[in-house]
Length: 293
Image (cartoon, rainbow, N blue to C red):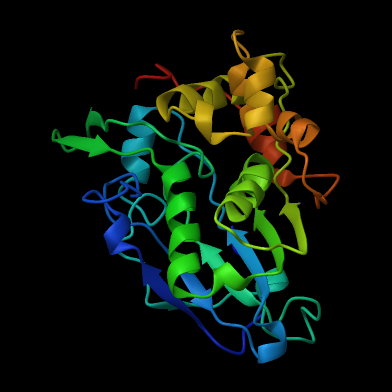
């Protein structure tokens, strides 16, 4: 998913967090390459303390081979990320298109962990790929969030932020549901004096629902990546506490549960009909051999 399709006035610049990689915090993409984000500073001094943090979307991977395939793409590796990107819609710097946020500091968080920035698996999962070679896969989405916030605090002025909007689209919209409280609490814990903090997840309310044939497909897929990525500590902590001791913890990976337990102000944006969900939730089929093939 992208932030929009209109042409921006200025590109956002890539920031690679080389100090936060495998030799540091371990905030890396699926293939172990350094994580990063794109940044554009506020347009003027009046907006210097206004920030918009955006989670990139791009679906999920659901089992080891699926995640191996993803690790060879820009959604699982930073090796091919361009030096600059444009962002439209709610991230646009065109004030005719985006009058409320066009002059904010804008951060486009690149998605490369496979489960909406929620993974926190300590040891990599070694997978034998289609090429016959063993490859370690890292599920470190939560560490990527921590690394982004720390980098922005230390080097880009987030420490003086007063107004922060957290948002994202599709799988990034789900990330917004999962991490609204976490980002707010992290900023406060880091000493940021927030006056206003709100979130606006876009198209991230993916349904916990069976197919039209009454089969559990999407829920099975999300359970698998939740376990694979060790996402227990990467979802809303109030939801996780409520589900503790049960076999339902994985449900916190869904927007309806994350939203229910979210304490910070949150404004969902979602269409009544979602074509992706029509095909991939209501009309889905598990691939033969799932989850191991």
